[in-house]
Image (cartoon, rainbow, N blue to C red):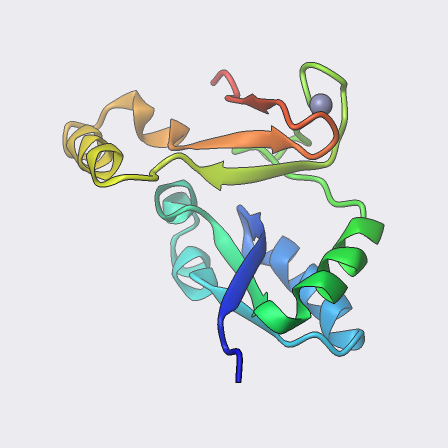
Length: 138
Ligand SMILES: [Zn+2]
């Protein structure tokens, strides 16, 4: 039996993830949220740990992606404003962590330890329309 998981969506706050969780579950998709409790406890760690992950069973991925595609979702910036793409002005933006290696993790820990302003830029945004990846200027 295939019990691997896929993470088709990541959210900054669990409120956004819960909305999509309910929508997917209504269609018979099993949904597991990761790190939502941690982020609910301290929303400031959301960027650091890469947001609330919405996991689904790999065997339901195709079905889940079809449903997600029909739902327009907006990502909120740290200041809770809607994020839109600087290139095509698209509003279907997802956030992803840029901590992708041991090296970047160590750099991140170093910056946190020294209270660098970079603490708040450990994720980037990706436009789902044109796939442009960008930072938000603070
Ligand atoms: Zn775009």
